[in-house]
Length: 215
Image (tube, rainbow, N blue to C red; front, side, top):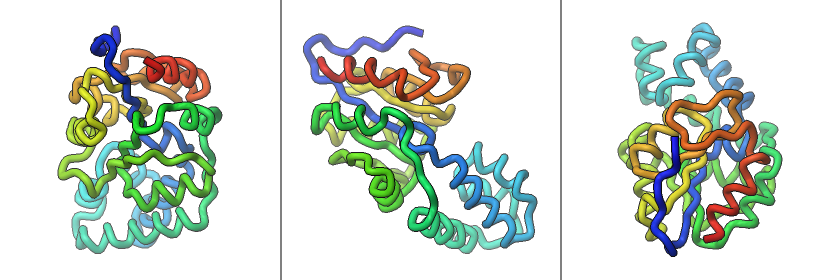
């Protein structure tokens, strides 16, 4: 699939997903869900399989329909906050150099997580933070809705066609495409359906991202 056409001479903007894109948090996410599942006497593998495809409230409805979903969410959030304080996090190779090389005010984070956790993870890994983080609390509709990426563009003062989305997950890719943006997929062995370009790693994608933003 070819890239969407940016407007000639217009500034370019880069919008990054976080988990799985800039920070390797797969082991942390699985550990959190395993601990949560154990508290409710559920099969951790089955719970995690559902959690990979759905948002938390949808996961609770599927795997723990007899429990108060708000209580389930409170327990999950407590585990996630504890993991941010004590878990081991690793930035993907090339992340720090890439983010440091982008023009100020022309990139943002668009995450299904919450900003305080993102800030904690970035502090743990030493990654630079942008001025703008669009998190789960900022929108009523999360990915795969286009709303998160459209809100990021609006707050940056950018037209969607001038934005590049960097994603690793199908829901995030769909969100960027529905927002009318160019979407590149990274850190997956095979391309996620719909991406305009695919890179096996962030390191491989980095020079192309910097070239896109340099216009």
